[in-house]
Amino acid sequence: MSVLGRIARIIRANVEELISRREPLTSGGHQREGQQERHEPSDSRQEESRRPSSPEADLLAKYYANLEVPYGSDFPTVTAAWKRLLKRYHPDRHSTDPQKQQIANQLVQELNRAYDYLKHHLEHQKR
Image 1 (cartoon, rainbow, N blue to C red):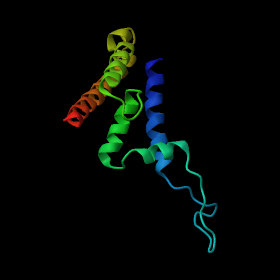
Image 2 (cartoon, rainbow, N blue to C red):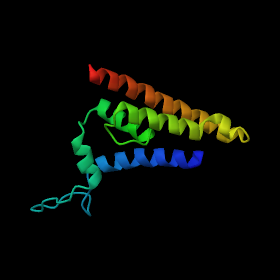
Image 3 (tube, rainbow, N blue to C red):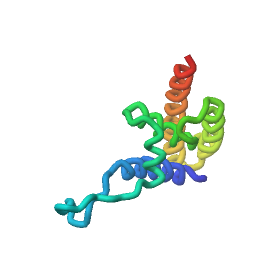
Image 4 (cartoon, rainbow, N blue to C red):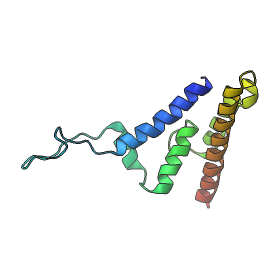
């Protein structure tokens, strides 16, 4: 997967998370008298209901998505995903194009930030 494809996946994951939180509006933007709003929960809402809703849980979900692992994965899975993604997007692999190298640097920083946060969280969770 290219660097730009990786960025697109991260953005898509964050946008889909924001969209899944919004409540759907009726056709007029408001509910008519006597009508009840009915909508079926999507898979993302069912998945979201399984995890606690808090700023920390949202941050955890973001970092799990950045490392492309399911929410709540164990530490060895997180470590393996982090190493795999670092090998794929390391800036030295994109040294021929300065723009791609800059993007790869940003991706690696985000991957490291996600890994460090999840490592800290999972270590404290064991205690």
